[in-house]
Length: 143
Image (cartoon, rainbow, N blue to C red; front, side, top):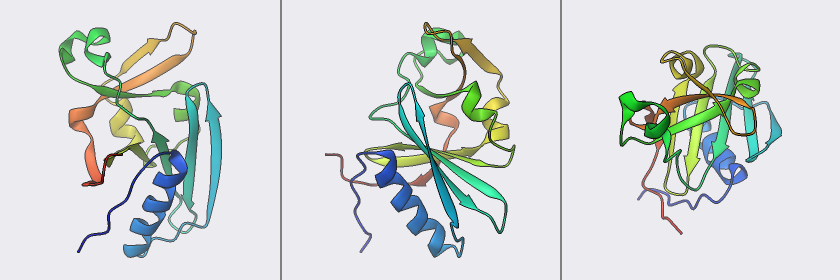
């Protein structure tokens, strides 16, 4: 029987990601937390393979994504600040955790559509359509 998780924060998501990576013989040697205007992001670092797993938790995706990018009308998306992306390598993994799933892609794919905008707070962000993210793990209980 599959294990059931409840994800309430980036910390919860980081535990799940660490467990899942361990099942693939990927060992996380260190981690760092980053506070942003919208919450806490966590980087899990596989120093052996030189890959970061950047985790962002949100209760819901970027629901107004299609309003900013008309080619994605009626679609949801995800977004990360330029300052966050600048600290990641092209092959680092971006993980977007929600209460019921964790979605993923690598940084170079995330920035490829070139969907940049300035927020009302003057922060430059890059966005990506949710439908193009892969499932890292899912089927969680939503609480």
